[in-house]
Image (cartoon, rainbow, N blue to C red; front, side, top):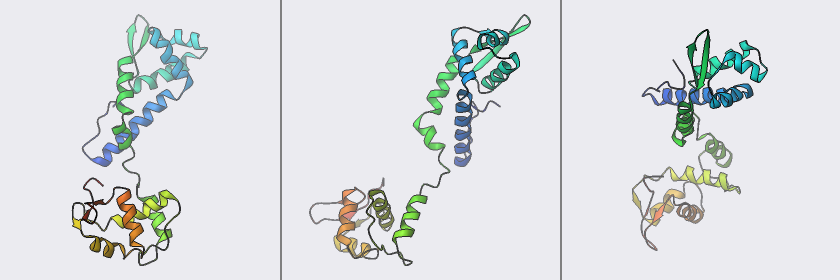
Length: 205
């Protein structure tokens, strides 16, 4: 089965692996200088192995090897003509692969098996006590954001809380509830209604 045209299954993990495999095959096909030169020549006109070998100063066996890989990923195709196989560039397939495999959805899907919370866990382990309280606010912004995400988890999305309730919930993490409350609101991770109204965590966070 052509790995570039293989369709991922409905299983998210399998789909992620399929996306990664397709990306690796695609970039591997384009990562070799001789294969790129072959594609450039075929973009001009269809050619045989022998013609390509003479033009590139390579052995026919070497050119055949590169053509087999390019055909394997669907970038070139061959048709028999007399005693030779004539190779042509599948330029439509190349454009389709580039648009599909380099789309944001595909690239993000290829990272679906990555532990996205690993950094936050490391920060929290360094800045909290065994009972979960924040020892000190990190000076670095990225680390401070990680502590805010750690605190944010106690708020249910869409549920409304009074300021008294918010302070009580934040006090389990640090005595400076004003700083935590202010920055959660500043980042938009907690919303506030009016000057002294309710607080809530947006659904999309």
